[in-house]
Structures are given as structure tokens and as C-alpha cells.
Image (cartoon, rainbow, N blue to C red; front, side, top):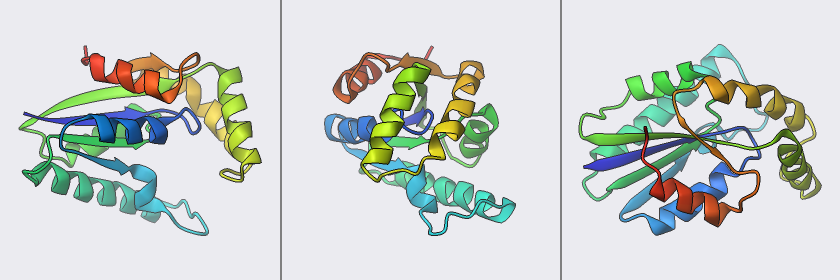
Length: 167
């Protein structure tokens, strides 16, 4: 049975880094970062672009699921409301997949520190801090397994994910 690893969390929590580790550690694995399906400059958020990115994600994940070469499909994105997760899953043929839903979270101060480091490194713009903090509280309401990454590095988080089954 294939496994679809759905990993959400606020910007700056370490999703992409952790998923890159999982890609290397899981057997026959492919990794899709939802941000890659909407990498534009300028970054335009409208109903049309939101629809487009969800369709892009659904298309790519279905192709990975359909491909017999992959046992593990790892997907990450900022999925801060249940409707996003449900919308993506509703587009997928997961009849022969175990779906593992996780949310990576961390303490507000830790998140700020990580985001400031990304800003200093030129990876993010300062407006990311407020947006990320505003979304952090919403993860508690999601039907996902929560992993608090506050006191862990990416390797430790990946190890916990690999040992955790969805409840």
C-alpha cells in the first residue's frame, strides 16, 4: 500500500527541510512542495491563482500516486485550515493509499527566531512573520497529528514522523 504523507505547518517551521530528509530516508519516495506549484514573481493571490495552485497540486499528486514506481509520496504546504486539506484530498484517488496527515508546529518565539534567520539570509521578506504567526493558532483545530518542533532539529522531526502513525 502506498503512503501519502501530507505535512502542513506555518511558514518557517521547517516543512521543506524535513520533507527533503524524508525523501532520502523513505523507500521509493517522491517529494512535492506545494510552493513549487505556485512559484511566481510577483506572487499574486486571487481566486483564480488559488484555484490554479490547488489544481496543480491535485494533478501532480495524482500522477505520483498513479505511478507504480513510488511507494511514498511526501507533500508539504501551508495547510492552516481543514478546508485546504479536504479540498486537496477530494481531488485525489487515494483508494490504495494510506494518508498520513501531520502538522508541524512550534512555539511563537521559536517561529519568530527561525523566520528572522530566513529574512537575514534573504530567503523571506519581513511581512512573513505576521502572516505566519496569525496562522499558527489555527493548526490546533486540524484533523492532523501535531508535532511540536520547537526543541528539535529537522533530522529529529523526520525521525518522529517516520515512527508516528496517524491516530
